[in-house]
Length: 260
Image (tube, rainbow, N blue to C red; front, side):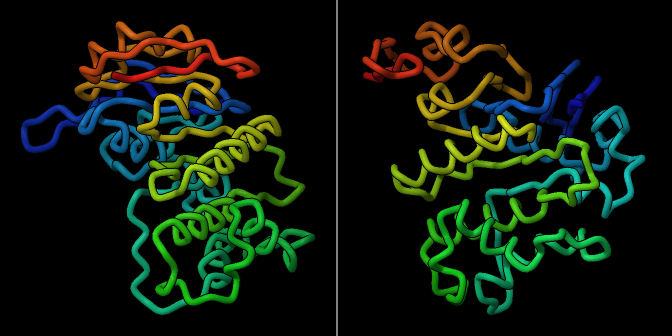
């Protein structure tokens, strides 16, 4: 099962935002979208989620165009975590996470009563369950919103189709320990068959946890593939304008990039 796109073109106000002739993302992997500011990463993620009406017919989830999916059925198969998660009312944390279960209200999970706490625990936010959302720090809010989308894609056992998590900079507001905790969790979910697409700015974080990276620039995918093959100093200097060198780190799964 996969998430694919064909002839994905998007222009607004005379400016090209996306030009992706072909994209094929298999489930069971972490796919990291990298690139400088304005490269098109968030726009591509929104298009893959079906938020861009003009491109929804060019994106296929499990072989069906997003325009052919019922809204609730689509919400049960994929969840999007955007950068901005404004909450206009004063909810507590558990209520925020419970919102993710709405698409499943007609067919609840056998462990529905404990599912919210499980999602909060996975996101490192269980201790916040009874707190008011508006009083949380930025990093705490980010972990609560992550728990919400985890709740959304936690399917009923009868639904065997792989699900997708689409996350836009989920680690941006997190401290170092929580950044790695979140990425380890995403790797674990991918190993269980979930598809993950994550926008990141930290190249080393992507290199440590992603199965493949897709480097974007000016609305195009410049290159994609295995992290160590793609994330070479020459490419990074060309795309980001930053000089770096690859280091070998003992006991690390992959090498590390040192920037200067």
